[in-house]
Amino acid sequence: MPLIDTLTPCPCGNQAAYRQCCGPLHDGVAARNAEQLMRSRYSAYVLKREDYLLASWHVDTRPVSLNLAAQQPSPTWLGLEIRQHHVRDEENASVEFVARYRLGGGRAQRQHETSRFVRTAGRWYYLDGELGD
Image 1 (cartoon, helix red, strand yellow):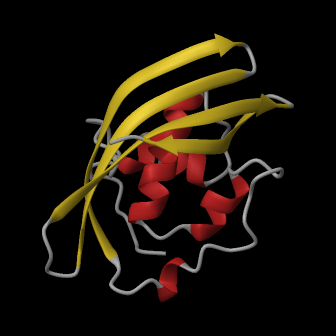
Image 2 (tube, helix red, strand yellow; image 1 turned 120 degrees about the horizontal axis):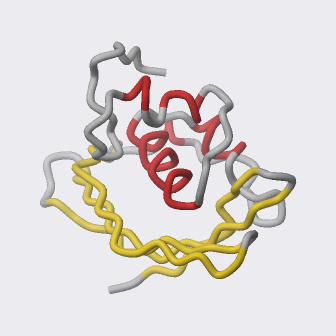
């Protein structure tokens, strides 16, 4: 895992430093809501924290591994835009987002997705997502 100092801006785009934003979640603190979990998962992709991505993925849909280290070319993450956070009830929510990235020296691309989240035993988990255009 890359070393992040306490003053480094959080990769998720919040103004707070990583250690006050997504860092505590990566260290085991439960997300307050689905949007906070979504932001922490984006930061985990930026930092190649496969352990956190798998731990925050619901057991019913979680893959065995992601093999982020083997991904070639490795994406360079450029930014996250949260478009909508919709709370359906206490245990179900969705987050629509656009994540921008570049592969190798290629053009910037975007992933537009609406992700579904469920809360189980007081913790939010990523369930699945539907790609947009």
